Amino acid sequence: MSADSVLHIENLGHSYGKFKVIEDISLSIGKGEMSALIGPNGAGKTTFYNAISGKFKPSKGKVFLNGEDITGLPSHRIVNKGMCRSFQITNIFAELTVAENVFSPLVIQQNKHFRLHGNVFKDRQITEKAMHTLEQVGLSDRADQAVSTLAYGDKRLVEMALVLVRGPTVVLLDEPTAGMNPEETENMISLIRKLAKNSKTTFFITEHDMKVVFSLAEKIYVLHQGLLLAQGKPQDIRANEQVQEAYLGRKTHA
Image (cartoon, rainbow, N blue to C red; front, side, top):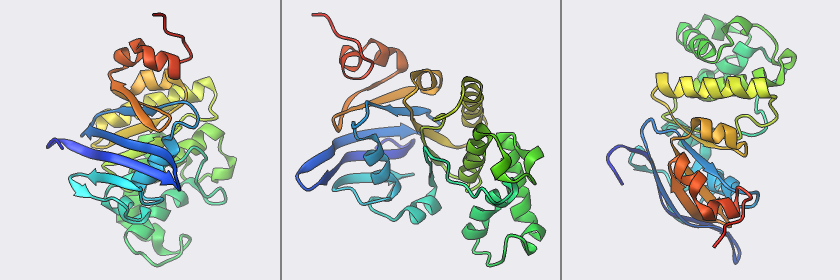
């Protein structure tokens, strides 16, 4: 494990009975490095994310966050240690306002036991952090708007704010542009690029849209049938014949 590694994974594997979903996956992501995980449906991407983010304990292997072994810890403890995950399906409270959504994880994080509609708005520390996060994602002017009234792309921005407000060192982005139209997709690409440049957060994304992947990632990892098929810079992955045949849909020629 290198000294600048923020997320380090050793020989990770997970099985359901005799069926091996992922096997012997090892990778190391440096601080500030923008990485992506790709692979066809059924490759094991969701299982991999679940295993490293605490949804379940992997059958084998180790996961290190900032040098600390977090293997098998429950997800809420992993979040508290600095790794947060967004989901392909929006995970927000539609009946609350944008600000109230972002206040929620801060209230939980700081063990504040009061109602959102009560004196939470008088807590200067929570309010300032929440509003700063909304500024980061471009939603500060909609803080008082009900989430249910937002366009789909803006709802995804609220989810991004929910992740960022916790102050993570690593963010796992699961299909961040899923369901978005082309304009919303471009906006999300620009936002992720800006956040990666201006914050101390390291982003690790999984995404089916290759335009998004090749626009953002400095390094790409390719899963195929539960195994790490290839890893490298975008230009290397584009040129890799095994990847072309297994994932990008092109046949190799001997």
